Image 1 (spheres, rainbow, N blue to C red):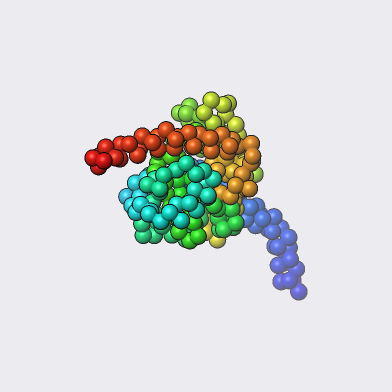
Image 2 (spheres, one colour):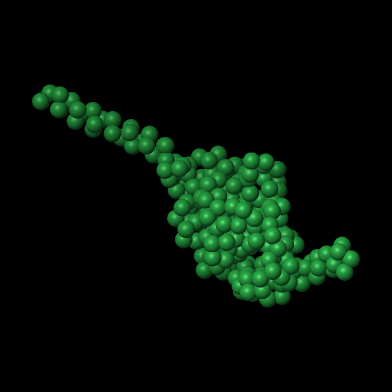
Length: 247
């Protein structure tokens, strides 16, 4: 009986400490948040991490498409029909599989977010279980995503912890005042992962479903900018290509 009473007392006395330590283990740190946000930022800048370091999407091996039906479907996905077929390619090997990109993004985002919100349509274009790409001239120069303030501070110094799984990240669109964007995290069996928030809608615009994006993020302006880029740069691209081939 004395042993039982002692056990109850121990549980009563020490359980608050256990809760404190448990909560400490599941509270994200600035460093952990910064690492995940860095991965997200690199991806939204169209870079992926490989064994050889970060590689720009435009540098990935790919094969130009020739199927006009596929070309039309790609234009439908992008909601723009002034492209030329020679701008599109199917990524080679594993890069051309949607499952590869899902697994890659799950390294910094939750499985649930990837499976329910992911929809590649900017630089990477998903069509069924395949992933295509378009010439970088059509997307890399558009003023689309927010960036850090450029003030020389580290990414961690741009982060404000709100609670155990929420931060504010200070960033801005070119020409606008810095804004603090909310980013949510979830502690999974694989560690911390980004799970959503207004910051994700803005930084990952073009990689998530249109309906998941905030209409105030400037997506319409983005599409106009992309279209203008394709109209001008795309024509120059085609001309330079013909000159190089002697046509």
